[in-house]
Amino acid sequence: MTDTTIFGKIIRRELPADIVYEDDELIAFNDIAPQAPVHVLFVPKTPIATLNDLQPDQAAIVGKLAHAAAAYAQRKGFAEDGYRIVMNCNGHGGQTVFQLHLHLLAGAPLGRFGT
Ligand code: 5GP
Image (tube, rainbow, N blue to C red):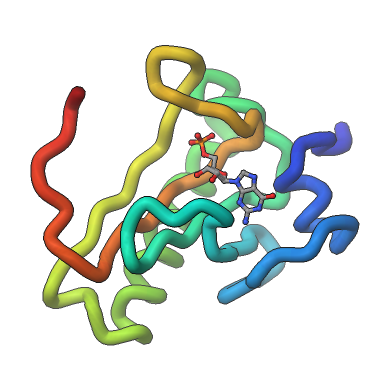
């Protein structure tokens, strides 16, 4: 199955992005509309529309996204200050791009969330 979303196009280099990390399984690039001083999206290369669509044999990719985000924070030197990772799912979660992705937000105190 082909990922027809914007993120699929970035993975295939059909759209430009500020790519900060890539390996065989995932890609990471800066968000086009950052919500914090650091806002990086970690996206699996396998097409998975939402967290609801994640199959048991695909579950490890979520750990890989989280590990890649933590490794990025370590490399960039803000791991000890801290950061937030977020995955939005469907309408109430605020998901707008229907290819699974993890947001890494950092670079300033982020405050509480939930509204
Ligand atoms: P969601 O709302 O689905 O959790 O997050 C989608 C994110 O993708 C948003 O933060 C949005 O700013 C970002 N985004 C949407 N289109 C593009 C794009 O073309 N390039 C990049 N780098 N980010 C995008």
